[in-house]
Length: 59
Ligand SMILES: [Zn+2]
Image (cartoon, rainbow, N blue to C red; front, side, top):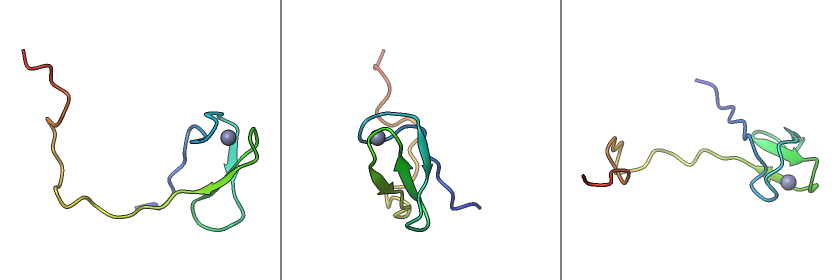
């Protein structure tokens, strides 16, 4: 499984002009706002997967 997680939008300004950063794994740089950030996988949630969680309108 790849550790690569590519963001589609800058989490700060929402721009799509992202490029891989030089700070290491998961680092990205936003060309629009000149911010550098890093994505990091923290692990799986203890509660596990819940397919029907928080989405239903309760008909
Ligand atoms: Zn940005």
